[in-house]
Length: 113
Image (cartoon, rainbow, N blue to C red):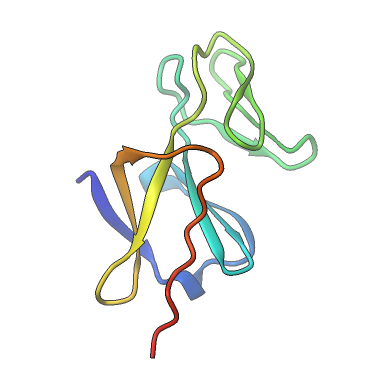
């Protein structure tokens, strides 16, 4: 599925949340959210977040990415993908992997009555 639910907004703690089964990072900053793919753009390995240096590293071939997913060093040819988010009718964050967005993108879930 290219659109999928990842959890209720309130279920995500502040900061970076890795969803292994989706190979995706969901980042929460206060009331804002964004999603970055964990698929390395070189050969599709799963990148890992390194908190100490605040960057994503690929364990397979040594690509490094900044916090915004942009490439620090290759062999990865391009930045990690960012995906659009929405709130499903039943109150879950929904990722749309068919819709890539730029690294300034933030999603603020509407307040529910």
